Amino acid sequence: MTHKINISSLPEFDASHYLDSEVAIAEYLTAIIDDGDSALLAAALGDIARARGMSEIARSAGLTREALYKALRPNATAVWSESSSS
Image (cartoon, rainbow, N blue to C red; front, side, top):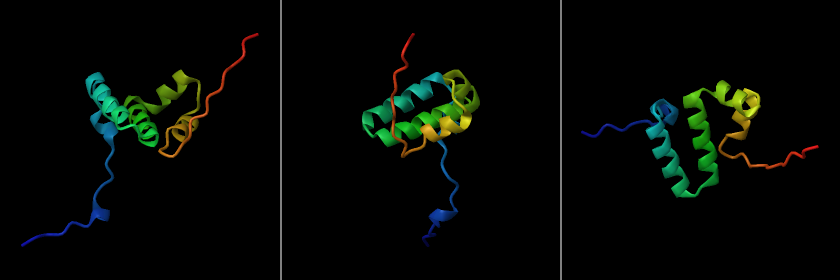
């Protein structure tokens, strides 16, 4: 007898729980970069930031935690700006 699984009842997968070493992070990031999907890359960077501690990463980058979450969401678009030096 085959038992059907209701997909909506499965827990959400969070890769950050498995990114527990520099090697795991490097392998994960390499696989994502090889895929060539910028939205997936943004999501993966979010996974890595959560694995390392979002608040610490945000503080190091000079951002608020909320701004970092927003920047790393899957459909975020990158905006680059140059700061002028006086």
